[in-house]
Amino acid sequence: MTTRRDRIVVGLAGGFAVLMPLLLLTGRVGPSTSPEAPRPIPTPLSESPSPLLAAAFERPLFAAPAPAEDAALPADAPALIGIVGRLGEDAVALVRTADGATRALKVGESVDGWQLASLAIDAAFFTRGAQRVRVPLPVG
Image (cartoon, rainbow, N blue to C red; front, side, top):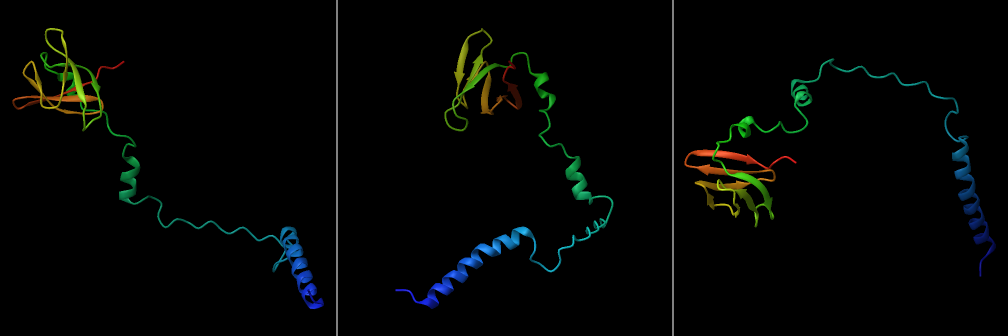
């Protein structure tokens, strides 16, 4: 059973819970109701950015295009047709040999004197002696 004192406390708490949001929403509570003057914009300490920051802004956002070594492929280099599988696990390179046949090569296997050294997402790297060649995937 509730006493009269409990009812008064609950009534005051309920009134406070209803009136306080209304007062806050109408803006009638606070030290002053006049709009504040806008704050001045602080001036920068220096006009130019630091050299490290300037270098970061001048650097290209994306990686530079591949070097032009693709244009200088030896005439007898294998022609890369495609790359199948997961790189680093079971990927193989599909290459067209000098006689026109198609072969699947794992890393370490050879064709026409060229050994498949590694695979990238868009190219295969072949070696023959000290010569290393990047053969890109065909475009299109």
